[in-house]
Amino acid sequence: MRVRLAPSPTGTLHIGTARTALFNWLYAQHECGKFLLRIEDTDKERSKPEFTSNILEGLEWLGLKWDEEPIVQSKHIETHRASIRKLIDSGLAYRCYATEAELEEMRNAQKAAGQASRYDNRHRDLNPKQESLFIEEGRSSVIRFRIEDEELINWNDLIRGHMSWKASDLGGDMVISRRAPADQIGDPLYNLVVVVDDASMGITHVIRGEDHIANTAKQILLYKALGLKAPLFAHTPLILNQEGKKLSKRDGVTSISDFREMGYTPEALANYMTLLGWSVPEGMDEKFTLKEAAKVFSLERVNKAGAKFDWDKLNWLNSQVIHNWSSEVLLSALEPLWEKEGWKYENKDWGLTLASLIGPSLTLLKDGISESRPFFENPSLQSDGLQQLDSENAKIALRCLLNNLQKTPWDGIDLNEGKNLISQSAEDASVKKGLLMKTLRAALLGRMQGPDLMTSWSLLARIRQDINRLSRCI
Ligand code: GLU
Image: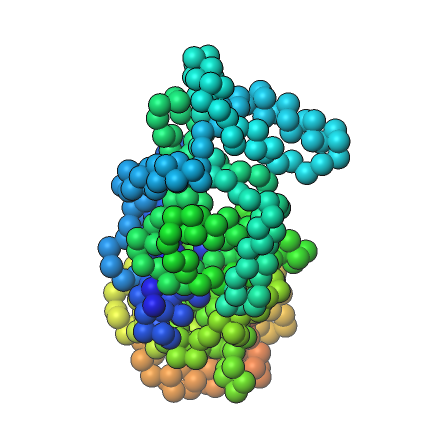
C-alpha cells in the first residue's frame, strides 16, 4: 500500500494540502504502508525552491515524515513525453493546431448560444493534407487526448462511495501538452503527468481533495489508454470558512508556517486538522496524538461534507497541549520567544518557575511574551492597578511592607517568609491582609489580573526587582 502527497511548490504549505498529507500519512501508518512525496514543479514560472523548503519543513514540523527520497517531477519530463508519444502512436492523442484566436472565437460562439464552454474536437480527425497546410502556415500545436463523449467513468471512491462521471462533461478532447512547434512535444500537463508518475511510483491509493474529482475522471481515462492499472481514489472534503466557502488566503492565516509563527503547537494543529473531516470512533477523546489517531484511522470515518474551520476548538486544543507540557518543555519553547525580545535570565530554576507560573494562562505560545513581560521589564501601571494604589490606606500598607522588606531582605526562596512579611506589614499599617496583597499585585505587576501573587513576588525578589517596584509606587 503506497500513498503520496503531490504538492506544487508554487506557494507555502497550505492547511488544505497539510490536511491531505495528514490523512495520507494516517492511512499509511494504519495500513503499514508507505507515505511518499512528489514535488510537482512543472510550472517553471511559479515553482520556487523556497516553497519546496517551506513545504518539507512544514510537514516535518507537523510530524508527517515521508518514506523514500521525494520525487521531483520535472526530472521525469522525458518519461512523460514518451507516454504522450505512445498515445499519439496508438491514435489516442493528436495534434491540435487551433490558434488561441480561433479557440476564443469558438468559446464566444458557445457563450452566445448559451452552451457550456468546451473544445469542439475540430482537429480530431485532420487528414494529412490539412495537417501539412497548418504546418506550412507555421502553426504551433498542443497535443490533445481523445475523450469519447458517450463513455461513463465509474469508480468506487473510498470516501464518497460509487462515483459516476459523464465523459461528455469533461470539456472535449483534453490538452495533455502545452503549445509547441509542430515537430515537438511541449511541456506535458498535470493530468497526464500525474498518471504517469503515480503509476511509476506504484501508488495504490490516491487520497486528495474533492476539488480533484473531475481530474480523477480524466485520469481514469488516461490510465486505461496507457494500459496502466488505476489506483483506488478517495476524495476528502474541503476545509470551509465560517461562511461555508472554501478556506482561502482571504480568510487570513492559511499557511502552516503562519500557524507556527502564531504560536500553535504541531501537536494541536495536527490533532485539529485530523478532526477537520474525520470523526473519532465512539468512546475516543477528541484530543489525541497522531500515533493514537493512526491506530484507529479509517477512510470510512472521513465525512463527505465540507469541514468548517473552528478557531475556538483549535485554540482549546492548543491550550490543552501547552498546559500538559512539563515546565522543562515549556521553558524550551518559551526561550526563543524571550530571546527575540532580548530577555535574559541567569538561573534555570528561575526560568522554570516562571514557565510553570504563566503556563496555565497560555492559549498560544506567543501569549508567553505578554505574560512574561512584567518579569523582564518594568510594567507600566494600568488603570486598574493605579486605582488600587490610590485606594484608601493602600500606600500606607505598601510603605510598611517596604520598610519591613528593607529590614529583612527577602530573596524569594522561602514563600513563608514573604507571607510573614505581608501579615506583619498589614498589622503595622492596621489594614486587612487582602488590601495589602491587592496593592502589592498592583505595584509589582501594574495590573490586577495575573498569575499567582506570591510566586510572582518571589521571582521578582530573586532578581531584586520587588523593592524598586514598590518604591516607585509610594
Ligand atoms: N499538484 C497537485 C496539487 O497540489 C496534486 C494533486 C494530486 O494530488 O494529484 O493540487
